[in-house]
Every structure is written in C-alpha cells, then in structure tokens.
Image (cartoon, rainbow, N blue to C red; front, top):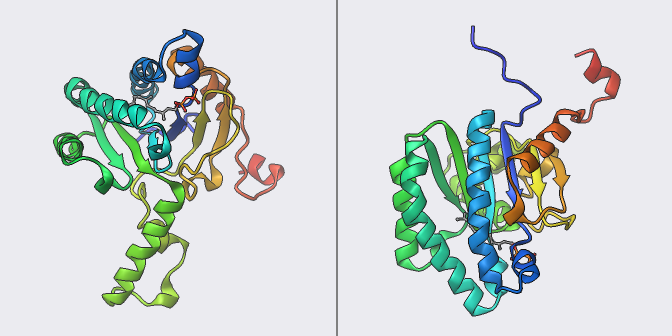
Length: 245
Ligand code: FPP
C-alpha cells in the first residue's frame, strides 16, 4: 500500500516573491539588480520543494499590473526571464521539474512566448515537481477567463448553464489539475495577496515574512513549513470535529 502523504507538508505552495526592489535599494543599486538577485532565491525554492516532496510550486513572477512599472524595469524583467529560460531549463529538466507558465501569455513578445511554450513542451513529461510561473497573471483574470471558457462550453452544448457549479468553474481555472493550494507565502513584509490566485486561496494557509525575496533561503522556507505544520485546518468544521477525525 502506498504511504499516506504527510499532511504537515503542503502539496502545493505558492509564493509572492516580494522585496527585490528594496533589497537593491538597501545596496544603493538599481531595482533590476534585486530582480537578478531574486533568481537565486527561485533556485532555493525549487531545491527546497524537491527535497521536501512538495509536488507543486507556484511563483508570482509578473502580475498583470506590473506592466505599469517604468518601461526600463519591465524590459529588464523580460530580458531576465528570457535569459533565465535559456540558462535554467536544462537543469530544471534534469531534475524532473515540469515548467508551466500560467497567465495571459498573448501579451508577451513572440520570442519570449515561444521560449515559454518550448520550455513547457520540453518538460511536459516530468513529474518530480510542477513549477508554475505566473506571468501577466491576475486572480480576477483567472476567474473571468474560467467563466468565459465555461460559457463557451455551454454554448457548444457540453453542459447546461444550470449545471455550472464551483467544481465545473474550477475546471477552467489555471491550476485546475494541481493539488489544492495549501500554503501561500509572501515575502517582503506586506500583508496582502495582490490579486494572486484568488480562487485557489479559498482554504490556503497564509504566511508572511519580512525577509526580502533575494534573502530567502532554505532556512527561511523551513520556518514557513514549520509554522504550517502547526496550523489546524478546519475547512469550516469545529476544532473538536477535526480532533476526532
Ligand atoms: C516583486 O518585488 C518582484 C517582481 C515583480 C519580480 C519577480 C522576479 C524575480 C524574482 C526574478 C526571477 C524570476 C524567475 C521566475 C526567473 P518588487 O520589485 O515589487 O520589490 P519591492 O516591493 O521591494 O519594490
């Protein structure tokens, strides 16, 4: 019989990687220096998930609102994503990581989009870790997009409008095939979700740390997991009901 998964380890971890700009400012360097440094923390997070047996990791790399940043920062981020794809995909693939970009990819330059699709194709058969990189992503977009896809399915006669319930709508959201989101981490000291994974956050545990993203390492992530392991997840039930199974 297969071993029962350890409920104290999240099956799906999502991270808002915040604080790159402040990390750079503390060092009197441009914000883009912080984004570059943030890449190392991405590697730490991937390594951590592989070691701890966390099946899905979803990272907020670029929100639909991030286009409003200065043009120089946006283009530096695009450049960085391109370079990261060229540099890291081999190693991620070698480690059995399945890469997926979630969000509205149509807004990206054709070259970058082609690289994203190429990385997804190449790693599609991997099973050690699902690494979902949210780019041009917004939680409200995800829900609206799911609603549009469901309406299109209704129009094709696949099911009746009266049958559209939570489970059906969920099917059209970005991470529908992944385990439910267990743990949401935001680094950088802000206590908000910033339009990330709004649907998926319904029963996630939230963890906030002041650590700026480029400083995040294995110990910092281990602290978040220790905290998570102490949480009592009730899903609407009473503490007594949870205790008696
Ligand atoms: C938020 O910090 C960070 C971002 C908008 C970009 C995240 C990108 C990376 C970590 C680079 C590497 C990622 C991948 C997937 C290769 P901020 O700029 O808002 O920081 P601040 O709040 O201190 O200004």
